[in-house]
Image (tube, rainbow, N blue to C red; front, side, top):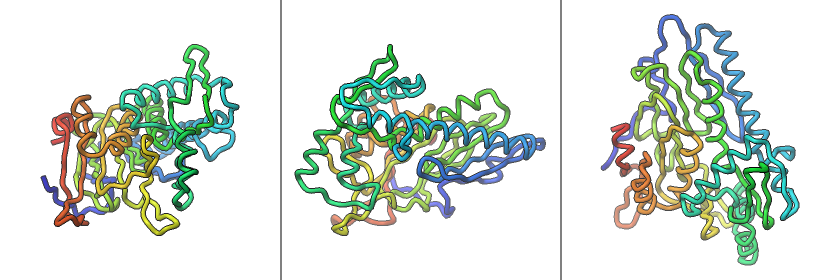
Amino acid sequence: MNMKVFAAGMLLCLAATACQTDSVSIRVERTVFLMGTVATFVVEALDRETGLNRLDRMVRVIEETEAELSTWQNDSVLSALNRQPVKTWLPLPSSVCVLLEQVATWHRRTNGRFDPAVGRLIEAWALRAGGRHPSNDTLVTAKARSGFRHVSLDAVRCSASRLTDVTLDAGGFGKGAALDRVRHAERGRPGGWLIDFGGQIAVSSTSPDRAWPVAVAHPERRDVPVVELHLTEGSLATTGGSERDVVSDENDQLGHIVDPQTGMPVSRSSSVTVWHRDALVADILSTALYVMGINEGRDWAEENGIAACFLILSERDGVTSGTEVNFVATTSFRQRFL
């Protein structure tokens, strides 16, 4: 099914008619840099001061999550775990303990296609530093020091241990975890809200007729919306190539997502978008399904009742079109949105 490209230019569509607040409330917005990306917050409030206080509260929740999960901050919990001597136990805050248990569950359920313990592979390919092609020896060593199977969790003692020198990276679950914490913190408070967190969207609406319009972007051009959806709850996460891919030292394009089984960057002319009530699950599964590829990912999502859609650039005579996009959606996705 070919989808027509919308004329609007933003992934986040804040159409005044669709998100219109009632006569006793206003909408307050803020854009900040958090967890290595840009986050845009939109809240409904009775007045500007109340809205600004609500924004402050939301930002603090994400900053607290970043302080636990950042690999850029040396004093974060995740950085401490990555430095912990091998085969020794590190006590964890209960919030991180619960989160890593959830991460472990989805690692198992996706048969390892989602794996946060690929920090050594990310380093080998320099995916956060411009990109490079590692030597074969470097890649073999990095693969041997990767994989969540090398991480042991003790839920009773709330502690973790690395069985070999792996490093965990929160790139595939950190934003989702932060958005879920915001949702829990805001539960029961009046007024709807929306957060666009580096392309992952989370929303809350006060009623079904006050949905937030959100566009799923073109697989390779994040400023070009392709499919418009209307959300009243949950989170929408997209994983694809686009400008997040990096150009290596050999002047070729490397995907920014690593396949934990092959150790190679994944680069596809497609994207995967997952909706889930839990932002963490949407974040994790958009990565896992992208790594699986269209056929395996679609089948896995169907079997597990996941609301997912795949945007695939059309090919003619073996050449990928930069404009025509094919749309494939699971049954759960179609039932919810189409």
